[in-house]
Length: 276
Image 1 (cartoon, rainbow, N blue to C red):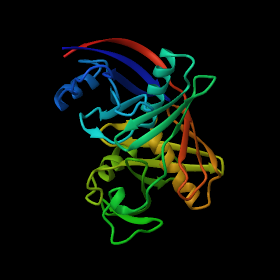
Image 2 (image 1 turned 30 degrees about the horizontal axis):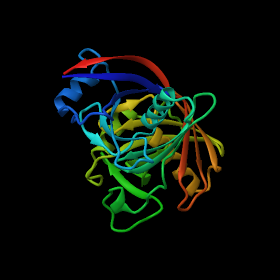
Image 3 (image 1 turned 90 degrees about the vertical axis):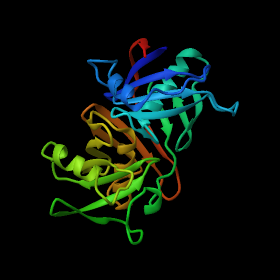
């Protein structure tokens, strides 16, 4: 079987889109997805988004998200921006889309400079919704990792996130702590791990160890989670520039049950055919 794909990037995050809106093909197995994620045996990606049709005429497409390790996850902010840009290239007159994700409906707007703003929905703090094992909901939690206790923020942006504040992101032990926290027993579905340094009320630096991927150049939902964590502690303004290894994302949140908006770039890299 052959599948046409687009390879794109969102703030350095490598995204592969497989458009199956007009077919009923199921995604390949985890083993095949891992091979495709490896640039030696496939196009290479951090996330692959499998586009399908929607039963609702107002929804442009549905999508599923797969990480480089072949696991299926709930959301990918950088991937949504790539989908929106692809759809806008099909019809220049349409710049606003509603998409159907595993985490619920997502609204995306393609801006004049081909940057894309995405409504990522409201953050969830109930431990059961993350999911996170805790006796009760708290503003912050104590997490013991390899004999050291860290104070962390835990929330869901459609997928689970654990945020640590650090003094220096360059010196943060992402390679060691990231996998340990990702697989921590208090995160039964595993978690994304953000290492955040607050520069001032409008700017943060962030590195993210993504669940099922490892450290990536950017993570859209991770940027949202980090800004929400800082805002809840009255450390950040309503709109924040997030500086990641792959570039800048802008996150806006008005608090309470308001949605989080994520803005950033998206760019086509290549296209081709996958022969499964």
